[in-house]
Image (tube, rainbow, N blue to C red; front, side):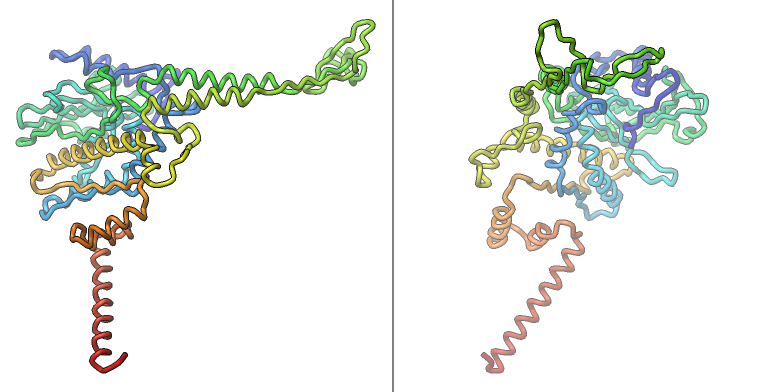
Length: 460
């Protein structure tokens, strides 16, 4: 997936450094006036989502919240129009990649979708990470000018090329420009991309033509334009936790058992220079007794390790980290249900986590709808011809209580039989559900006919 590659160049220069060089050159070359708030994505000295050298606590949060938010969730384009059929396929693509999309959104702050065409002319989604996109202008909440690096290429001479897409919306006219540059934002030519380059206009667009999944995490007023990751504002608590881990490792290192022995009981051997020397087994240290010292020839140093004290400090700091991110216990610290026994009590104990998941669902909905509206611009499908239906599974709800509620709703006509069958068999398609209900109806009719025949024939 685009955005996940890390290309290493000669001299140790990495791709993200080249991208930073590109953006500096881009803003310097931009002749039109722009808001400086669009220029830089806010950065803190917090752990990055792509950090693989240390224990990544942000990745732990992202993974668990991602699973809770997306388990068994579905998106479906509903339409009676043949024109909207390509949107159904593109919606299925978003559903299939929902875990990857949500992980990027929560881990970095934004994840972008640029609709593109294959060589055969079929529309598909290019997924672009936050560091490759910059907003140039907005009209209220609507983006009106934006640029993204949608692909990169390194030739045999180690030269880097960027394929850039700029979308500009003026009134209801969308202009899309695709061009190639090097990392210094200088015009370049690459044979593989010649067919992609050019400028196109779409009238009656009323949309920037790009999808955006923006993190629901509050920037506390520090980033009005770009999204921020889950650990935004957690620099201090992260430093405390890593310091706790260092202290625990130091405690174990200092607590290693050591044996002190009189050199006279050790083995004598030859050194590198051929001279006699004492051979010291690993973990053993020499100790010379002074005159009159009648101590033992061997002494063992094995101090007690203060693990529980350090572990308590670590768990306290991790719990503060969970609270600052906006979750309840159970992400970094052991889950403690306490007196929570019923479904209601469990939900109350996880109120913060449930609220955060609801915000994530809202961000996903907004992102899916914005992406499909962008697709509709390129497919020339009117917005009133389709809509999206979302179904999110509640991981904290008692399934027995949910089934009882559905059955009761079905009894008063508020829920269709198809809804009950889909709840029981979530992997069945609409056609398979219809076929299943048809078989059930046939069997029910057969049983009714047999019972009626039995009654009329005088049977018991």
